[in-house]
Image (tube, rainbow, N blue to C red):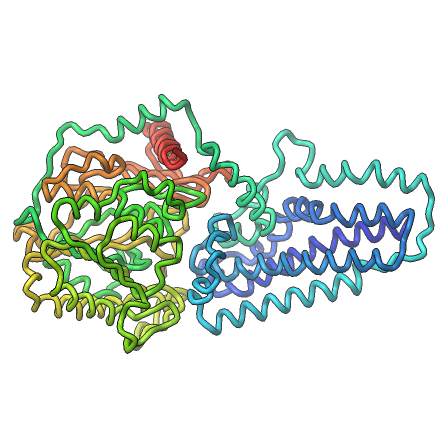
Length: 618
């Protein structure tokens, strides 16, 4: 009897201790970032306390099979049954260590826990490997092996004694069978309260990294994967009846006058769209960044229009592509690019321009398979599509693909052969880890984002060379250049991932086709990348009604608003305030409107998310 009970509670204790072992390895790995954010020591040390209930719930799930084994062993205990338990525990230890290692690997780039969206990327493990440096990959592999080995050794040595000669009493077996399952269920749901336990139980800090460390990896992954799979049959973001949501969105979109300020000298310019990988507004001095990171971009501003308040609606490259080319806002859980049956319902900027007589091309120095960007770009009807395999073999490559200077230079020459007018899009690669660009790294500041800002300095240098090369081309004077980020990135300011500052990105309209009076100016309209289609088509006097989520930023009558998505919620921005929320968090991350506008702001943002996700499901 004592052996059975002792084994049960020792195994339960093991899992809670093991969860905390992996948790503090995460903390040690990101100790520099914790110091930069000046997180108090007591807040770090309180992690096990705040994580306990969710850890206990997860441990109870893990103990279901051991319970049945112990139940059998209370009546019949051959040696081989001990091995069944050891094998099961070893598998679960390795699995949990794998989730912990994966979370360590993705946090620096995505600032989130392992979730359904991340798991989708496991379809292409080579791309994930290429996104990290070799040394980082080896460190993570070593951590996986160490956590697994330590967990298995400790479990076998101290927490799972072999049960062979068990003193059997029928009344104890009956009591164990009757009492233990309800206790396990009670532990799984976190108590007798009406609402079962969820991730919000472990959220306690204003610092995102502490909340990521606190929430149990497997519990969060379970909720994200298995619960969110149901969301493809229903909208989880329903906050009001459909008519009310539609009414709020219609009011947001309401425009007193359908007009535009024409900032171009021609209605049929060539269009070169340069999509910058992971550029935050904090890389640009005139957008609040520190000077010296992007001096070439600063020179370009003198010949163009700098948009000062553009927000990335998503945080992934494929989300950025859907926004730029489809005018469709990003949304939680998944992305429209990974589902061909859905993105075929979305309009296409490149297809519309093709119908207007434009020839089209898309250039990327990496692999387009990531996030199904390749399928989406092909659907968009680009006549010429080039990825890493299509460029000359002589071009130097890093782990993610060909460095920016070579792809930009190639496009500058290649456009000589294209029929005008043309739409040419190039997606850069070098401002993404593992930061192996062939360029010096002179910026010695930036703390945890030093590698990132040096990569941006390199891409900025490549932009300068490209525009110098392009200025000598016959097509240059007839070309509008749109330079915009696919999404933002953490910066040396270490903004909270749910803040508006974290999602702010640069966007610049540049070229000789920009009217002289607008060159060197700024445009302060609040908007998103998915506003590009409506804004651009209005300049070309082409219809844009099909891009109903996109607004014309040069129409002075359109409302000022912007939207961004979180992993399980959204942010909504108006000039007088904004808020950000997740379904898994009962509180707002940010709620900064005036008291008078607060309720309206919340209803607008939630209605917008409800309608976006509802259309995605349709």
